[in-house]
Image (cartoon, rainbow, N blue to C red; front, side):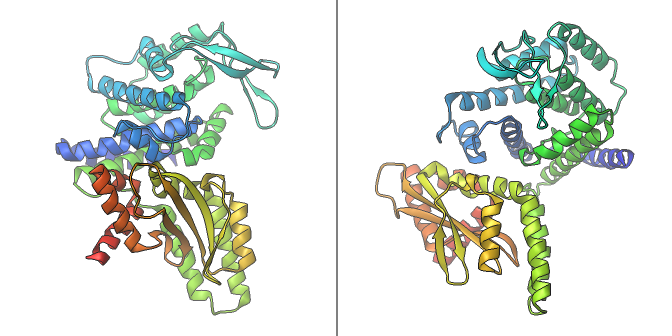
Length: 448
């Protein structure tokens, strides 16, 4: 129930407050992680295609990479600026958010005017001119999956509704911060006051409200977009509790991360997917000799688990192994049959892989594990690369999801070459993800 969730949240908030102020190095490490997650996921929800690694390369190292439009890079940088703004505003106890601030956030996010496709009130297609920081001048309704149209506030209604919303906000400080943030978010998106950037603006204000009361900024993961939209739709139907609880659970995650950081602990988040896979597949390993019916049963369970969690699995791979796209011109996605030890190339981009392709192959070959690899080739930088490609092996098996270098010596060779050429490989490659880093360190120990 929501009351129990908020009570748990308040206990964690009190624990974090008791640990403040954090050491500067712990706070800096925490904020870098939070801001990257916030920037990447909030933009990814709205269709930005930069990977997590490309987001880090842009925001931390000031470099660009990948076949993206300049607008996507500028969009990410603009969002990062807006994140810094709301953080600074939240620290100022002498001021509170006003309507002009909300318009400023949208202006910072969108930067300059542009055209966007839209839907008319009767469901027709149109194009609208977007002016950053200005309330919409044309309808910005959206088409629903069932073919209907969801109508937001009209152009004429919007200024008055925004004044009403900000007046409500000014008088709602007695509410629990998460409840206040959820109400603001939902009421704001029902108005949809701007031609574009409404979701990102709403999430910025949510975190402003939380940070202003000493809570942590929460992150809504793009891989969880379906659940995020589902609880928003329930709020549209008059039941706001699921959406409020959803935000409360995200805040609990953020507070737990803050507590870890304040204690100086590792703030790499526990990988629930790995835990789930480990439980499921260790069970399978234990049962594999108990007959065909049992094997068939666990294979169905495992297939269902992969199917349900497929988007999250790909997102985690995107945040780890695919970081290496920054160094190579192309990649190939290959499935490994452990029956004969050979790779069967699919020759498709990993993000174009579908769960049906993987599950069909897995069932057809009757594999005990689902194992596949990504091969990166054609080194982008000048000089003679140590090898023409780097190969990672990703395995879904009895020990959970694991990512390893196909050849440990290749890891050492690649890193040695990259260090010679670019001076600081580990600093950049650490952000490729904990799984890959562990493989790198293991490979280095092996060579020594």
